[in-house]
Amino acid sequence: MSSVLILADFVGEKATKATVELATAGARMGEVSALVLAPVGKGAAYAATVNQGAISKVIVIESDAFAMHGVGAVAEAFSYVITEKKADVALFVSHAFGKEVAGRVAMRLRAGIITDAVDVAADKTTTQLVFGGSTTVHSKVSTALSIITIRPNTISADFVSSVPVVENMAIEFSENSKKATIKSSQPPVKGGRPELTEANIVVSGGRGTNGDFAAVEAFADSLGAAVGASRAATDAGWYPHSHQVGQTGKTVSPQLYVACGISGAIQHRAGMQTSKLIVVVNKDAEAPLFELADFGVVGDLFAVLPTATEGVKAR
Image (cartoon, rainbow, N blue to C red; front, side, top):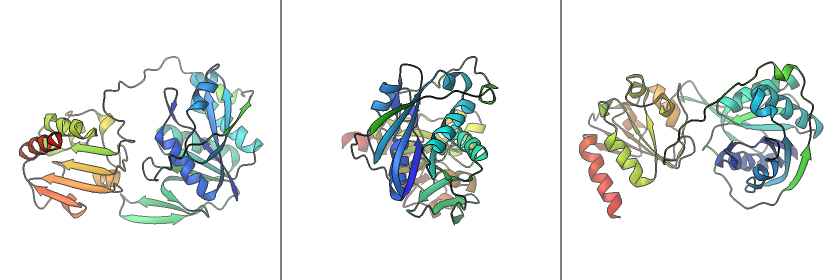
């Protein structure tokens, strides 16, 4: 049985759904510990939210270095804990920050790394979708320590309640981890909709919106969904780049993905094709995304979506 260490992921002081997904994947391979890196005085509050998934231990390190020195301090702390606890599997959320930390840990510990896994088996074999999602690859790290980053929403999270043992640790940071200093930061402005990469439902708009996302947003709000956009829409300035779904944007894997006015170029498909159920609304019956769809509506989104929105509200 492997010893698995995950880096707990937070929004504010609350552990994210992606943390539970990491714990669920880790439990397939062995006993799971979660590392919580918190500001001084906040360790208990952060750790209290890491209470779902098969986590047997929560290891807490409090330091203001994480906010001050960012990735460098986080990578050093994680490397220290994984060495002290002799873990042989390290799991990270596969977003920009998680992959940067994972890469630095792999270099520090001379370990093999696999990024953007969409699944992992008990024997540490991972599944990846490569070449724009056209090819499935099964691979395994050959070093003693396996470092894996897992895409959010690709593992069905087990939200079983847990009461893990909490252990506090301390670390003296080296000068190397302090070479970058964060002088100021601005958290992203969040509206009332779910976070795109964690939402169970995503409604996206593309070139077919002609820059008018009102119908897309109204339909998304009726479903309690996040709003996404194709690269064509974000490049045209119609919607913020932070909402772009695709190979060069965000990867989503919701229970339901509704694509409105999106033709389905491989760039976009790479970011959403692992969605559990795909619905396409497009007036072009030959749009490539229909090949991937579970359900399709051939029609103008400006006629289809308002009717669908009223139908959802009526139900």
